[in-house]
Image (cartoon, rainbow, N blue to C red; front, side, top):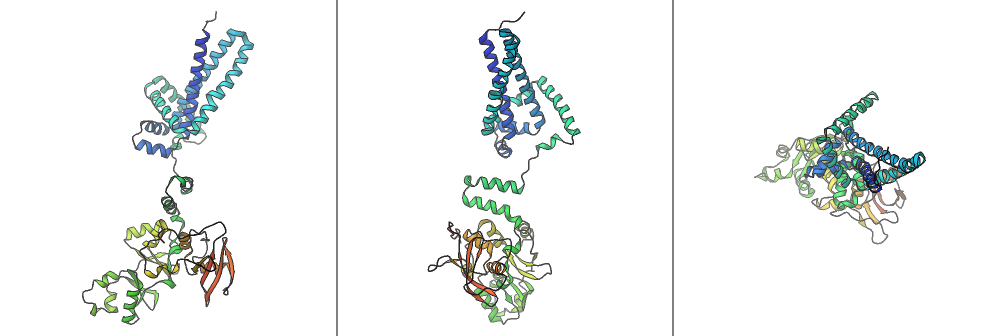
Length: 434
């Protein structure tokens, strides 16, 4: 003998079960797709829903277990109610039709629609679900025990397959993933801040050789010079720290802090011998040292200037803490008066920019927002010689990464001055603070 259920009550129960199915499907997708780092940030600010969600996601096996238990329970109940109702209305044929209909309705309203909505707006849905599942697992012991039993058997099967469910909680970002996230969030950050963060991530790919002042451009004090020439070098250099050597920089003696020289009470007694007593010990670093490691080494050793050496111990140049920081924040303005000689100058007559060919390629790219190749020689002169394979004559033109380079002046086997024209469609300009 069947049980007569009013059509209105039956329809209301079916709608309720369908809403429950949509809730479980949507919250499952939301909790699994919510941004874990955003979640961690909100939890640290005291957001209760975020705290519950973060706690649940520490054991995703238990969370998935409770969601699937509830979802299957609701879907089976919904199918059973519809089947019984259709049997009462029209017998087995109607029950078959009802089974197909309820499957389509569950797919549309209980699966696809709520999961799509949750994937588009995961946070709000995840927090609502987190409150509910936290309550279920904490206060409804029958459901908690059932989920624990299901989780025990499912984890056992996974371990047989060589998997550990506990390990799924780790979601550490790699440098490449973090770089991609920053690149995609560029519109949400101030341009300067975005550039600085990107440069910090690139420090591990840049070596001190890439940013050092080459040996040929190092300004220093030769102890074999006469004293008047030494004084002239100190006064005209514009630097606060100068390398001191004998005859050649490979015979470096130490590093002079000019302030110590100024602090001497009786300047009339100064001489190369007394100057030598004011020197700091030279600090050497290999040319292949990544900048991120060198920054830490500068901090640990409390140094600001290092001599860069190759594999044979020969000095190739010097690198300073300021050079390293400029790779992160851009050019400083507190430089010697003649340091601007390497900055490109607009050519008002022929167009393009006049550039000293000894300029560092990375500095040019950073200053002018150019895209010259940086995976080869470190200077523009080196790029030109590598590209041509010979010493170019005045008037020779070549293309580097789409930039037209015209040789204007050479001296011996060195290119001195060139004219650079950026590719069509770009508008190179000096970076702020240059």
